[in-house]
Amino acid sequence: MSAAELLEVEAIDVHLRSRRRASRRTSDAHILAGVSFSVAPGEIVGVIGETGSGKTTLARTVLGLIQPTAGAIRFEGEQISGIGGRRLRSLRRRGAVQLVFQDPLRSLDPDLAVAAIIAEGLDIRGGLDAGERARRIARALDLVGLDQTVAARRPGELSGGQRQRVTIARAVVMEPRLLICDEPVSALDASNRNRILRLLRELRDALGIAIVIISHDLASIAGVVDRVAVLYRGRIVEEGEAAQLFRAPAHPYTALLLASAPRISRARWRFDLAPEQLRREGTDAAPESGGCVFEPRCRFAVERCREEEPPRTPSTAGGTVACHRATEWRASLERDAAR
Image (cartoon, rainbow, N blue to C red; front, side):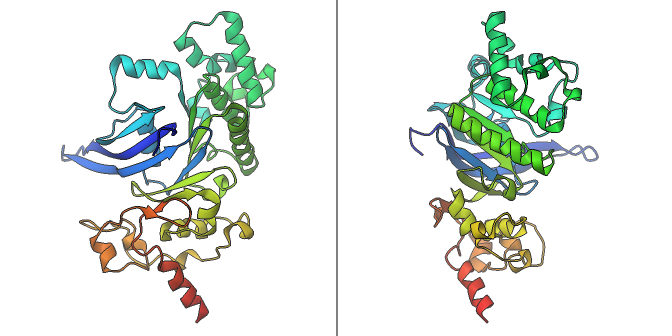
């Protein structure tokens, strides 16, 4: 990571403690383990993985809603993990990092008009007269493609796509440097999903902001992101330039996600495997000590995979991959196909 990065996430761990009612015992869950990635100014990065892989925990940790138990998070060169009190309140009032929620209906106050919803952050920050407040609301509506008449309406009067545009307007009105979008299109139909994802890219181009899109749906974000980080059981198993990673994944889990996704363009993937060719029968339980977290599901695993956790090493996608057999498993498939 370099000083030019806007966001730097360096080797963070997150443990969450939960209490079981029946036994009154507490247990420690290791949600994120050694997660590192970066986002450059104006870059769109996708974080993908199955439900339960730790994607939302990662978003909440970057936003300061959860504190990492190890590692560091820096924004514009300033460490933002582990801070509290006045520094944390000042950071949030600046609004330089904004969140776009998954479910717009649940994240919008049904009793407020759209103008009031968009201006919530501005009102907390303060310092604007009525004219400037109204100008910024109007500009935010224009940026997300909503008519100015929407300002007087309430969320219940809007379509799902319009509500999600309101949540994006509420974020961009703060003039952020970074948007974190947590499953921003999962609650929308296919046509609205495409429109919202195109809108995010248009906002990046118009405003120069960086965007992190967290999603389980690889197919949806394929044409939008510049780089991808693949999260599995709280670990980044592969990351790299999007087009190259989709064309030739270096980790079997990435390949499994691609093989399971609806085909958008076979020319783009050039990867035509069935999921069962990559997944082996058996438990999903992680190794008891050490080892690769994907080993129980990987048909290419060997004894080393069960005993030694793979480090992240350079990959063919211009990024990194955590796989002992990154240069071998694909060749194994090709040999099988030739028989």
